[in-house]
View: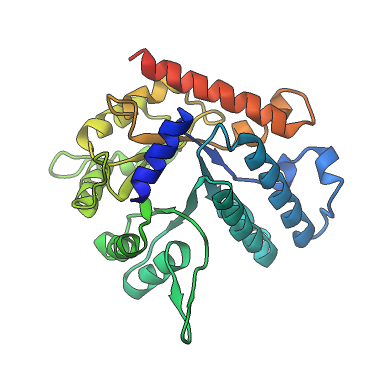
Length: 303
């Protein structure tokens, strides 16, 4: 089962982190940009794919997972979407678990189409087509079960998983997610309870199911409470590094065995070369990845 695969990859690396490939042209060092034609979408997409490839090669023995944010590829149109697909395929070939950060949602047949595009296979005339080679996709729950059940159906058929937005890392998440309902729950707690129901019965060897939750590492108290509320739900934790969260902020979002979550870092790895004042972006990312791993593991050990 795919959640077991992710857990075992994390255990093997002793590192519950994901490399966020939210890659943009302006994140690349000038010396690297100079090798490509940055005046065209095709040239920028080729540069981004090459950058991603070098980062994965430098980090694959440290980091077990990548999260690829589709928006940064969509900006470049068709060339960018080809780079998105090629990035996912390249990371899979490198042995990494791949999360597509697409935050899709709709209802009925449209939701099923999104699920087939990013997690399944599309039937053609006598054959099938797999759009994007990924293991998990992020999903927005705003439309309720009508938008989630089609994803869960495809996940069951294809051995894939989803991460549902529950308590996101952005500061204004409280405007909606912290609103109190008539039964005393917040909106994000109500969503959490729905995620529990959507995933029920799909638990793997380690007790976690196919319906995971996106929980911002920037909300330590809420995240720790959600871990108690959702003992069988695997967490994707954005917000580390550039958004301000550290290992001690997110330690409570793991279970007592140090499992149950993967921590994403994007800009702090992609742009580590800027902070370290070097053009060797791969070496800089590796140093930051090791620092991040140690920060998280020390925080977990100190609980």
